[in-house]
Image (cartoon, rainbow, N blue to C red):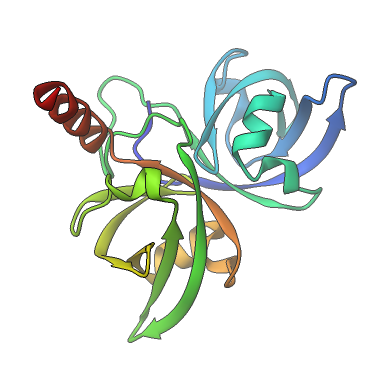
Length: 203
């Protein structure tokens, strides 16, 4: 489990593809890897991955072909910036919201507008995830816990807006996004279960 509070911007240091289509990624980090066990979970731009090897300041993770097909990881190259968060420990501060590290899909950046000292970003999302978004609700984008400002349904297209403060803009890869880019989206876990209970009650 995670909180969506990014604590490091890692850099993809190596990519190795095996015959089955899986990838082994080496990610350089400022984390003290002596405190990271083999088998530990690290959210990499919102995707929960397992540490399988460590070398100096680089940890290695295996990414299945299934995960590659559902995420942007297949587009990563050496030098790509990755938002990193270590898994929660008992007693840690819950600064964002409960995040599982399971990517639900992709959202596409429609526009970026400067508003005062922050940035307003508008994303488009596919219909199967639209019902889980609500104004003032939580959403995770590339592993970052954010608040939905508004949701718009127009001409069969659902978009939602968020505001990004300077700290988040600088300390995550959100600040490098441009219109047309895709990001990992994880819907709020609470919204998921509320929707499920509603389906059961209406069945």
